[in-house]
Length: 152
Picture 1: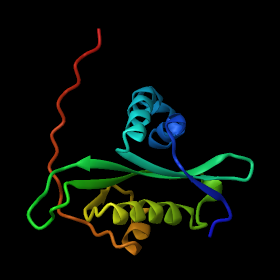
Picture 2 (picture 1 turned 120 degrees about the horizontal axis):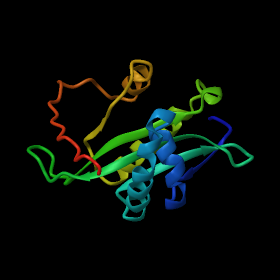
Picture 3 (picture 1 turned 60 degrees about the horizontal axis):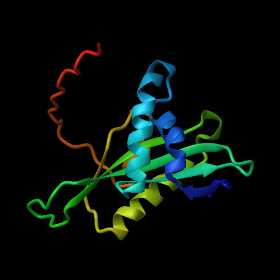
Picture 4 (picture 1 turned 180 degrees about the horizontal axis):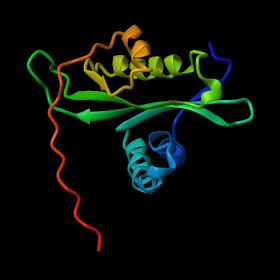
């Protein structure tokens, strides 16, 4: 246990979650779009998240799930997949098990909903945490990014 309070994220937490998603000031311009999206996704139950909060009400960690309507696939009749996102812990609160606790809550949501496929992107630093929770590296994906239209 971490000794902090943990609560579900609400649409009012969208700015905080966007800051977890884009913590660097060089990415600050991305936050407003994410705030709008994640607020609606929380309302529509397509994003589920949890926040770790100090006794004084300060958010010091978070983790979330994006729920994707993927459609049934061979061997998996469940139409949803989940992607673990926005796992973040303030530096002074790291190495206390908080990220693990929040990720386990997210995984409990997938279990309750019968979602078997959960993916994530990770850094080398966080890889041992995810491996200890049963995640395994998969074959490389191929991705195509269309160019953004130029703003005028």
